[in-house]
Length: 428
Ligand SMILES: CC(=O)N[C@H]1[C@@H](OP(=O)(O)OP(=O)(O)OC[C@H]2O[C@@H](n3ccc(=O)[nH]c3=O)[C@H](O)[C@@H]2O)O[C@H](CO)[C@@H](O)[C@@H]1O
Ligand SMILES: C=C(OP(=O)(O)O)C(=O)O
Image (cartoon, rainbow, N blue to C red; front, side, top):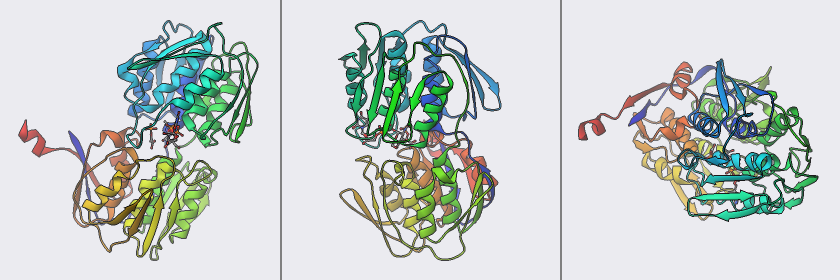
């Protein structure tokens, strides 16, 4: 198995460009199943393993997906001839379950396996299923699959109050509602920028989605949709990770494509920690020259502090003098990176949903595991400032969400390389 080796001690300097957002492109790929006519042309599609896996599901359903180069993908769903998504591919990523809404909306039925994704909590799909049921679907829960059927062949608009502002449930229900008969109101809808990007794409296809990005979203069902062109928003989490990289190394990094309006809570916390963040034309610059200051960070749904930036900020706090507090409210098991940071010498005590982090002067390089995608990013960040070599295992998690991560950190001056685990090879 490949691993990433980081030699600590380099100050990062230079420019890096954010790719299209993983968490925006995945629901949008699922949405390309909706139109009966026309092709969709997507731009800024990041070459990530999750994208390839979801594309594999679309191909298996009968979509024609063509890579046009330079981040462009053309998709045609006219000839979709099955409503069963292959379980093996569905189990590889969380967002695969998002094909259920579009299939159910267009064909009145769908059968989808249990989704995978980062292991950061139990991650049930009850809110998705309750929403489909509110739209009139009958749900059958098998051991390895979920089947949903609209008895009349078409879903019916409804009022859906979500108990929690789930990103995935909001997206799945938006896609189910766009072809439903009548009006749907999603209350306590998620407001993340990726929700707005999906709504923009749905509306470009002829849907009538209103007030996306607010807690009450209204969707007027239409009879049919057609393919549309859309450019994916820049990845705020990837951009945020590079901002933390600049801050943790006392560097000077320009992140092109980073959108300040998508990153407000991250910018605010980095400033509070002592980094200077300046907005430049379609970019954000991070510079840090002074000492780091401790923080109190609590994750929350948008516009709160994003849970997907919790592990990276935790790495920064591990080397920040003083005592910091990190509270995770979105996922119940998203602290696994602290065990790995502790292997590097971090001083962390977990108290329920809060991690109490007392900064150490220096982390020590160690063998650590990317227990999930953002935990892996945190290991890279910690490795950048650790004494000696940090060897990160299970890097397939990192590659789910970061394009060319080694090359891009190297371009900023980091000492990173990807290598085979020689010891494992010897054991074979
Ligand atoms: C592909 C993608 O976009 N992934 C993102 C998406 O995941 P995802 O869409 O899975 O996250 P959700 O917002 O749905 O989950 C948030 C919380 O709601 C709970 N929940 C969710 C659905 C449900 O039916 N029942 C339920 O209880 C989850 O267990 C979790 O505790 O949003 C998360 C929260 O911003 C991010 O961390 C993920 O990176
Ligand atoms: C948790 C994440 O992804 P997923 O929902 O795809 O597991 C993430 O992007 O940090």
